[in-house]
Length: 106
Image (cartoon, rainbow, N blue to C red):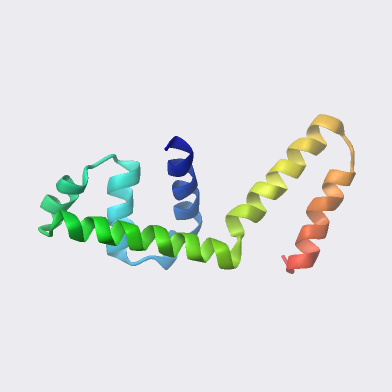
């Protein structure tokens, strides 16, 4: 569960500006501030199920954006290659970073 939470928060950090205000607010309250579904529902005067559905749609949208754009994946890949370079000083890891950027027009 912790890994899933980390994944969702990483996606949110990158794509939050592409969410609606309601999606963003619900996400922050549930995944970052640890509010329950009922607490969010009470705060916004909606049903618990409405909050649940909105969060489910938000996660689906974040996942869909990542599937199409792969920004989080690319950032993690670059970070991993850089860490390997720092450990080994082998420039092949820097080349892998550059190759990825060239392939993706970054």
